[in-house]
Length: 397
Image (cartoon, rainbow, N blue to C red):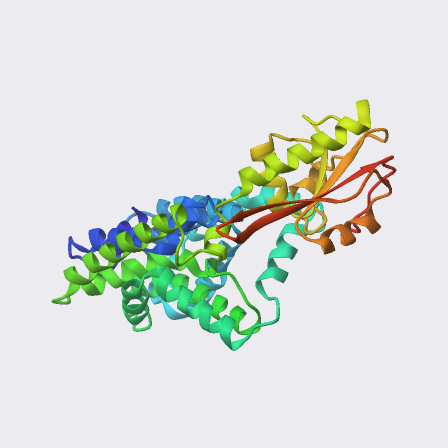
């Protein structure tokens, strides 16, 4: 919807909004971010809404207030939306019409609204030493890039945005002439450039630049309406997306090409793994007696992903901090009772080794391993270690 509205600001052709909406819907990455319930889905929608409102050079100044609301929602969804701020600073030098608008109070009111919407999150993070924002900065500019990881990232952008949207969108925006085009160019190309730079330093995630995809689709649509094969390219993109989605769905049900890959493994095996983990915990509790409740055990997970899967499939709610990474579990700060048997559930041997120095307790038995396989391929595993006599935990953060 917002990609279509944005395209209307870039082209007077009535086909442009439809083309932009179709190109956005045909983006494999946007399909996945929605299907996997990632925070990218709301940030992309809110960021595109803000960009549409900012790109409008007609109408009253009240649109800046709504743009501020959209930016605030985008920031609450994911911190990458903050890249809009340096984009607007650079845009003020490039866009004469924006400089004229900055002489009115409306853009500043919109900025204040965005800050107010984001302020509770910012204050919460500041009161705890910025663990969330600090982690994301470190995560975004990590080291360890290789030529292969960078090539994979570039390939993921072409495939994730769709070849038509990314190629034609960039071609339009690098030659931006009108004020709306310049505003879209700044807000879309800067996040793309920064994430590309980050991936020259360290291996990043393919979804990082996805906030720019609807804007690229809108820009591409403004060009496609002027090209003779434009309609064919749009519907070709839609057909390609249908083929990709159908292939992906078929492979998830009966893997052939994706067998043994993370693209298949990450969607399978959790329910069975948690059921096997439950059985092992019940076996331990049978020997521990009243100090151990198999239906409501206390769990220390190795990662926050394991905590989520255990809570969802096991319906367990007493979960301690995941020592592998800061998360909401640290904030909740749950700990076992001193006289109860509790468990560490991890994915690798090293996870238990990292856990032991931080928790004062005694082992209540040997580590038990459960695995889930599919077609001879290991999907996932869990190592379950029982403890008792809890006397405190300190993960050093």
